[in-house]
Image (cartoon, rainbow over all chains, first blue to last red; front, side, top):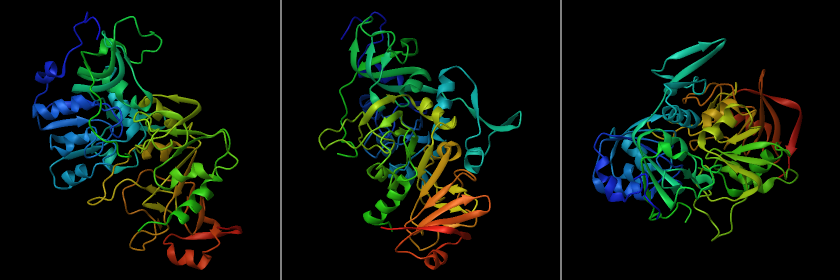
Length: 231
Length: 221
């Protein structure tokens, strides 16, 4: 632990009051890899529900964001893929979970746009797919037709980082980086669960992926409490 | 349903022949994941993973898995020299910019015109598109590996797709356990057949129309 000059370093119990019913929660991670395990458990413990979850996929039934889906905490999810979590598909088919499918790269750019303070993006991806195109504006630039895909932000963004300094500068680990940098920038409140927390000045500024200005709270991780799908 | 490992490997081996040194290649889950085992001449291939990696290596030895080093299917992997990590928007920027030379993926249906349906069966299977729409629309070459028929015996090569499309007119090549088709402006062209199958068997099991190449390759198994 390091000097808490910016007041961002805290414990899980210190941020519990930030979570409320009906919030939109942006989450980092891809197939559970890089989803903050302690923050997922905290959300389960707070008992909040009717959430709108926004992230790459629905994890696995007991891994990553999948635990919130399995625990029926979500009313809606915006994701690119739900295939690895059968609970998501069955809740969707029963009408208990609304799923907005978004192509993976488009979803990432919509989150990035939210983090960058933009209104949305223009893309031709999914323009042939009725389910993607339905209800969206199109724009013609020159000869090209594009879909207008609105930016996404979340009431709270939950992020997993390999290392944070006390200002919230973030570094990630291998493919656990995935959507975490963009998610970290797109939360109205961004909470980071970090494996290592170090004093400011101990990270090389050239290595930092997310500047701490985007980060509100930093919590030391206790590691995963699930078994990976391949174990 | 499902092909045996021998059949899956024979499809993967044929697909591997499309890959050459220097290419940036994205492999889907399922049969495409077997392809690296069949790359005999192409040693300098960069495998791209949508979750933020260029330069995927082989599977790790048992016990050496790293939970933070996985492919887009969530399976543990290793990296090769020259590999790099990136976040999701950059992984997809490479795809949308057309920097991926070949993407090799599975399908539910492919039409005579090369339309691809591989992400949803409304009302039953709803996995989602993942990165398939970007890959199918923007990779320089799109190769579909699939079982020739579905689990009810219906042809997966069709005149027109009845399932929701992933992307239109995007598929360049189809490899099944029976043979290989190229998608041409004139329609499907059967270019290769596996030795155990025959043109008449393929005709019987294919709903879409196709022509047979004048110099068709017989693939020994």
